[in-house]
Length: 258
Image (cartoon, rainbow, N blue to C red):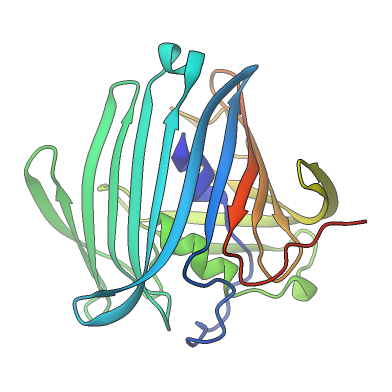
């Protein structure tokens, strides 16, 4: 369930990578999202950002966690952990970790990126296997892509109907071609008050999780933070809604309409 939130909580038009000091975010940023599945309060998901050092490089370390709670856990137990280490200046990911248990469907992957050779070493820790695959220039993982896109678009440049694409690697099979369409601007009522938002349509693969490729709608705050405020998804079975429930450590003021 956390993958639904993370994969599609992104910004928009990709430009040149930002240099350190111009980031939209900073160390200490933290979000919590409340996820509803039908009438059930199904789970909470959190994202935390800290500054660290990884193999001699200055990086941001992001941890994303999600789990079902209460009655929902009796129906469908979920425990998800995602981590990424990405460069503070370029936004390029160095390592991605995906450890999930979703109703018995489990994965335990570690991916190391080599941007000089455009390759990724994928280690399946569950089965004790590993392989190297070719990637592309500008490849991102599931989490680093979220922060990279937040950092590299200007809302004033968005055009309704415009689409962009980005290469993401978060599984062991292949690079995912992510596409996102800008639908316009909309005021969203939240627990914090009314928030002016940018509305997007992320395209997904229909099949095991999503009913069709246009099953998702995303609202992002139209301010300097570019925070995901709400996500709605039509699933193969039922529907899902995720709302921003708490936050701290934002670099800029979170704008509420008066």
